[in-house]
Length: 117
Image 1 (tube, rainbow, N blue to C red):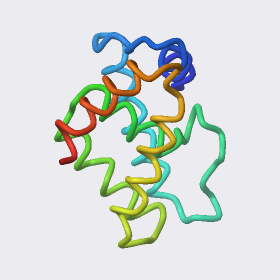
Image 2 (image 1 turned 180 degrees about the vertical axis):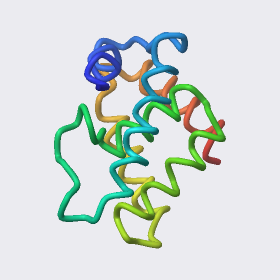
Image 3 (image 1 turned 30 degrees about the horizontal axis):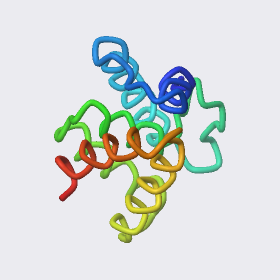
Image 4 (image 1 turned 180 degrees about the horizontal axis):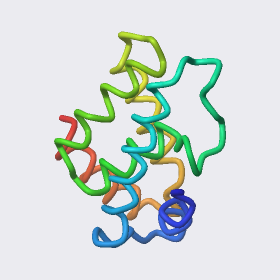
């Protein structure tokens, strides 16, 4: 569901908000629907059950504070953890690893810092 977003980041480009926002919203709705199911019934198909990390990255790239709050709730529910800050920091590091060069990594860091810190 978010392969294009990841591909663009690896190329040093930000996804266009008008392309990413509908995917983020649809992905969040799908994820919330999957979480209504008992854990053994949750599918691993990312078209139906998008990765929480990808949803988190999309919210960061969109600089969507409300979306971040929603995905944090999803993460706590899905991961059954209260260690949300540790999870977020690990996800941020994974996103930064995708940056193809130092300049793009700095741009990503600025975007992340505006939302998280």
